[in-house]
Image (tube, rainbow over all chains, first blue to last red; front, side):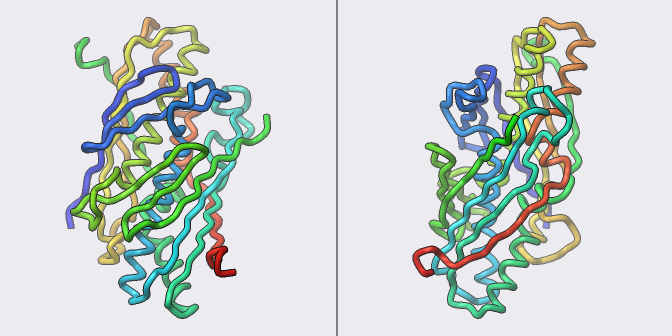
Length: 150
Length: 150
């Protein structure tokens, strides 16, 4: 199968607020007041948690179908700690991002214990967001002047 | 400074739709019809792009202020390719997630070229989401029965 490309295009509205679009969906991102924003929307790292949880949902359901079991209930919560010192330029002692992530999945299916274990292992392996968070991803930067100024 | 904890709590609404909350913000995530969903919201990996773009905005503005330059315009677009074969269980040839990410930043400031180069380098280094995507993050899974069933 050929690759799928995903894209966001957007602009800085303020020092903390970004508005962007992916296809026909609008995203607004801000920071809470404690981090200098106006708390108009979830903050960047909360978006990461949302994408991760949403991805696990898709993959759990896909694989349950493959295994032939039915999911009765699936709750997904994810949390992680960030030490803000590197982000704020105060210290390089800790990494900038989440130090680790804790995924809590509440799962009820009509499958056996073995089928559920198979589901859990496969989902972790095949979840795109899990991959990008657990493993390094090459990132290329292109910095230009705004088009209107060229 | 002490760590900040970020948390999402939510549940599977359908095989592709997840609804969750971070603080007082609601997140709905779905898949496009081509990926089996009803396209009611952006998909998981689009949330990742949104979080990353939003994070770069915050860090660019924070560091510009430190350096003492003003940002006149900042547009951030990010894209990446995913090969869906591993996600779909068809092949292990490619990784599950984004193979790489392309960040395009259109920047105009009142700073010198050197100040802008400093801004760009520092932002990459101090952006929490950049860190979690570029580098591995430990992930712990806890799987339980739904609370109502305990």
